Length: 431
Ligand SMILES: Nc1nc2c(c(=O)[nH]1)N[C@H]1C(S)=C(S)[C@@H](COP(=O)(O)OP(=O)(O)OC[C@H]3O[C@@H](n4cnc5c(N)ncnc54)[C@H](O)[C@@H]3O)O[C@H]1N2
Ligand code: MOO
Image (cartoon, rainbow, N blue to C red; front, side):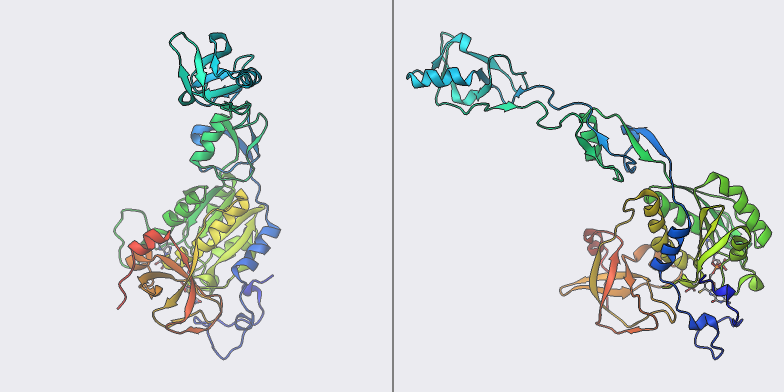
């Protein structure tokens, strides 16, 4: 198990970088996000039940099975335009005999959408027909056989697969399902997550924090990301700083959710310094990975399992919660829903300043982008729980290498938080 807390040689230094102890914490490379998720996905089940929902409630839901057309559309052969229905063989013979005039019983005037009538098999559009005063019709040329007919099932065939399984339903999908006679669709039940903030220093929403206190805000971030991915999430009361209180909160929430998110109490010094979350997870289940790659916050990130359910520990400093939640939670939701949850286009851009990646991991900070004549430039935002980081950032800088000084002007990968229209509109003025 890659759990640093179980290493035998471990120092108690608060700063775990480059010290002389050479403990296991320094010698082991942290797991990457993908390695940690692979361990989680191997050990924990991510099963969801199916449910049928009416089309009116199916937007954005993910299909659990393919859906098939209940009937053919159109249900019968129909005229594709206003015109006259004719029998093609009869018209051919008339024209061969040098006559272009049809008597009243040789055609029928019909509007678009009219069902084809025996013995007719072709529709000549009105624009190509002259009506004579005596009720007869004159045509100009021989149409091709079957011209102007929309065949039964030409749009949709009865039994045809309309939407495959594991497909997130769009408005267009709902329209074609309705057209094909499907009114209830099988979808995966939304993955349900209970969120438990941990910390005696937290005060509720709308409260003014006193010295040493902070408003509990990480849960609304986590809930929002989960909902954007198609999940259902709610926040439990804050758990105080003790193993027992955290265990009680976990056991209260666990029966009602598919997976559990704990926020905070994950400091690497553990219980010795008042952080009990990892200890509580170990007491009730097991830690599968802790202390993963890329900062901010990766050192405290935890994945575990309690009663066969996935447990995620998110570091609490808000910018760390932001970074880690955005990188882990959509991946977990994708595992539940078998379909992409959060797609961010990646671009290459040039660094406007030097950046230092994490000492024992990579770096995924939020950044602003500046749109210039030569393309995008990556401009830092003010880190931490700042408006700059939470509002003005338009991308995430992706650097996997550890302990690397990225130099000004160097190309780097950025995940865009929006499409380019928004990113350019919010383009940061760089100096
Ligand atoms: N001895 C060490 N201490 C710490 C280390 C370390 O390596 N050695 N790493 C630091 C780093 S880096 C991180 S990241 C944090 C991980 O912190 P926790 O997840 O344990 O966070 P807490 O201690 O519970 O809280 C930190 C801070 O965040 C604010 N906070 C907490 N909960 C919320 C919430 N729900 N909403 C908004 N803000 C929240 C609050 O100001 C807390 O004081 O560990 C460091 N320590
Ligand atoms: O891991 Mo933390 O880098 O202070 O947020």
